[in-house]
Image (cartoon, rainbow, N blue to C red; front, side, top):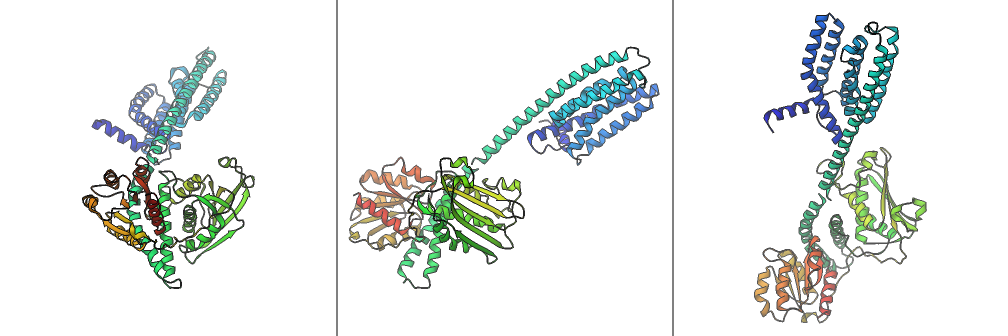
Length: 584
């Protein structure tokens, strides 16, 4: 772009900054161009008109032209004035000029061209509706002037015997042209605006997608590192809990660590639900029991100024993963907590209703009865504009660094994946009510235990030789310790190449290989392929903290006997080892 074009663009942007929706930006650019053109080119028209008026001694023309040109300059430099005021004033100018010239000079001045431009300006700057109204106003003005022609009030009519006939012929032609041009221009610019809106919406959607795609890639890596950190915490806390007597004062602290670890593992899975199908073992759950069980976890995050009340009206069964429902409750309660900086009341209710009693939801068509989970708060509430966007990923009203905008978006994704719906009601000063509707299923519910079950040593396990490979020393040590406590013989390697060098000399031969997926130089997949070539019948278990890679790793490779998602519990590890040994 040349320097002159860049300066022109900058000047137009200064006159009327192109902000707002695409059609608003279009109209602001057009307004800026019209005002700048009126000031620059209008100067020559002003000079010619005033010169002719001076020669003919018509003072009124000098006054009107000067007033109009001065008003155009003020509109041009008045970039702080509202757009509607500036555009409306520019639209009115040709109507006033046209009326003035037609009244005083009739067909000998530029009255009709000014009148013709009046509705066109309105359509372009204010829209089709304004253009149609302007055509109506133009018709009224031309009719009013035509009706007073016989009275000879206008200076020029007495000297023109056929003025009335010429007037109606010219007026009807101008009116027809004005209507056609105004409607055409209005629809043209509205069409361009809709196209620009659609293009902007497509660009925003592409940018939004889902950014979530980038989030999926990012969280895959974060999940790997985060779950690697959780693995030794989970394993060691379980073992420490097992070694202590039931009445030991430290056991409740270890229970809290294990519960928090479980919640952290579920949280990672819920975040990843934006970019992959929901994972987890869904079972029949009694929603009320889960809400009561989760109450202790929720109370741990509430300050003393916030009261929590949980009411279970009905025993209602749904199909879900307990961890994901606990995360739903925690996210909704956290959102309520942040809406009550000065304290208040959070109420959790569980009940069962016929679908027709809670609304005819098309998303639940074919469902007779639903579980209803309601979380209400006495917080500050939300405006309608905010309420419409609360389930939108990344939308947050918090300051930068205070929220990700994923909490309620995760809730919506989870409930939708469970075949339910989530609704929100709120108003400023009236608190917020989040209602979750889920299809019910016949019981009985699975008996849930918030803590992982204890594991015991396996008889005759010493005959099995387990090889573990992981580049993270803490995970490698925690995993091998557990396997040793179960009674197995264990050999551990931090480097895949070291295992391959010693594989043929291992005594006794390995019964199972556990390998991490993401390792430098050689991945777990590559290691598994190399080992599989040497010992095709050896069970190989993949350990991974990157949930995004689970499907990619397992689906195309028959060499993997199973996958352990980090952080895995001691019971999950034990069950996997027994499963692999049963296949030998």
